Length: 316
Image (cartoon, rainbow, N blue to C red):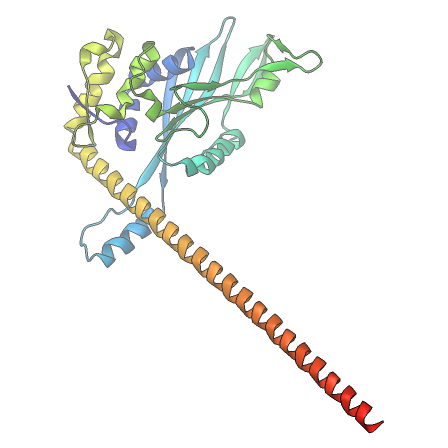
């Protein structure tokens, strides 16, 4: 079966716009029971348009992408805990480049500072305002530097008694509100990993299933449990959507432009390093010449002094 490649932002967004599928994916990752999930997409326009315009003008192209939007998917979820329920903000971001970490930090800061990320509970008959906890899920299009072979990595909030190093099992709203748990999913690590249901689910991102067309993956629907079939069929449906195919082409164009920019930056860096090296060598050569000239001057001075001393002896 052919499905649209969810590594593309437009396909990923199309997939997660289905609330049942989004709830299934998120609850499978965070291992918590989500009662209600509200999707609130955030759209950001990048300045890559200027790059593409300049690139296309130089190549005398008449067609170009007007702009390209990068989506970070934000969800508000009501989660059932053992003895109560709470509202959390679930932020999902996809990164194609390791340098996107600064963008992640910026968006995370926005979540913490957003005064609307609150909910109310009934505390002994009184209405009490609470800050929503934050859960971050990062889908990375690249491998990590030091951790390999692990497709899903959880960074969680753990309390430690500093005096004895033991973990404190009780939870505190104050601490949880000022810290957050995160899940990192390096997509290249999903290859051939099918050890549990979550890894089976996430195998829809496995890029080793690509066809000759990077937009399309080949999967076997029977490899997935029945509860994941709707997800597979939605990705299958995305293949036939003209607007999605058009936006996937636009993403390819963006990535090509970014790759070209990176190559140009590397070339500029190499030229700059070469120039610095040449300037350094020139400076060293000039310094050596100055030292040689100084030595010659001192040698001439010594000869002159010797001649003067000889003349003085003759006169005596």
